[in-house]
Amino acid sequence: MTTPPPFQRHDGWLHAEGVPLARIAEEVGTPVYVYCATALAERYDALDAAFAGVPHLIAYSIKSNPNLAVVRTLLNRGAGVDVTSKGELFRALHAGGAASRMVYSGVGKRDDEIEAALEAGIKMFNVESRAELRRIDAVAARLGVVAPIAFRVNPDIDPQTHPYISTGLRTSKFGIPFGEAVAAYAEAKTLEHVRAIGIDCHIGSQLTNVQPFGDALARVAELVRDLRDAGHAIEVIDVGGGLGVVYEDEVPPTMQEYAAVVSDAVAGLDCELVLEPGRSISANAGVFLTRVLYEKRNEDKHFIVVDGAMTDLIRPALYQVYQAIEPVGPPRQTLHVVDVVGPVCESGDFLAKERQLPAVERGELLAVRSAGAYGFTMASNYNGRPRSAEVLVRGDRFEVVKRRETLEDLIRGETIPEELTR
Ligand code: LLP
Image 1 (tube, rainbow, N blue to C red):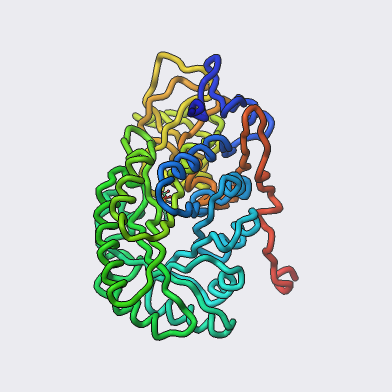
Image 2: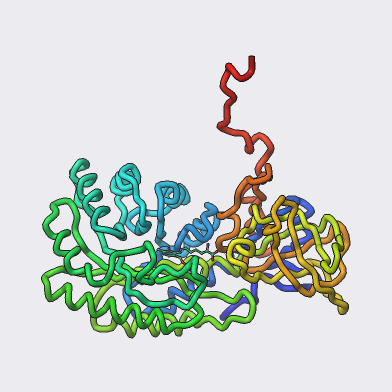
């Protein structure tokens, strides 16, 4: 049985599960991110169920929303974690994750990061170059351990998504070229402190078509057969993340459709699957709440100036993507075409452009939807803006799971050289 969507209207007012968003804004202030624990767990469970027929590990891509309470919600459902830095590893461990259920991806792993991951005892490194392979071997040798690895291969498949989040094209910085894979595995075999146990492939994010997943994994499956023929024991296939979600009117594959295409592609290989979903778990489990400060009209433009900005939620500015935005209060008939902009001194600082919204008053709350992934985690302090609070809702209760930053937080760690003060 599925529960209703996490953000719904009751008596006209938008709620997060059983909690009125207006109450959260009142008590916690704005801007604020609000996540629904039930929605997070449900998305996780749905993916888990879709892959029930195949041995698998869902390694939640922590980059999409690394809040400890969010991560713990998923760990409690059985998730592993996909990390890409020592910082994410630290977070994942701090949230209570087991390193043996973590994979480590990323093109620029430093020695100290490799060391931290080895010391923690991660499940496997996704290796993005042969130079990195040698570094991992060297660090593992120093520690007297053997590092489990997979090569991230680049299948040269167009994921048909935004160029900044396409990663599986020949021209991207990610992975090793398909043609080099056999030689790379052969080299790994000559090194004493690495053991190639798997293969990895992540082609991009926000894919709304299953075909590229199928095409990429068909190539991976072929490679697994070649590698086995060459004597490499490949036991794990990491299929990355990338499953798209609805922001506007997309029709992304369902988790069942996604699972069917992935399982078909790797059928008969008898491998454990690792999945690295981020957005498909977290995006629609969160909203970003902001308050209207001013309304202003310049020439032909009609602006709603709000207290949230690109520093809080950069996706619209950075990728020119759509995130739905609506008043938290009751819907109204008459709509106006407006730009919703923040206070930051950049024309790129907008949350929405040319959107239809009702007339809003100063103090009114707006909710930006689909903000649970790549929202707070990409926030900055630019323009002297403390980062917003984060709230987790469970049923009819809510809790602040990250307090709003203070002015003191803004200058923490900075010093003025003594001679400048004389
Ligand atoms: N695995 C790897 C190796 C990745 O690079 C990523 C995302 C994921 C998994 C998770 O992908 P997901 O399931 O979330 O699509 N900031 C951008 C998205 C960047 C994605 C980076 N890599 C955005 O806001 O759209």
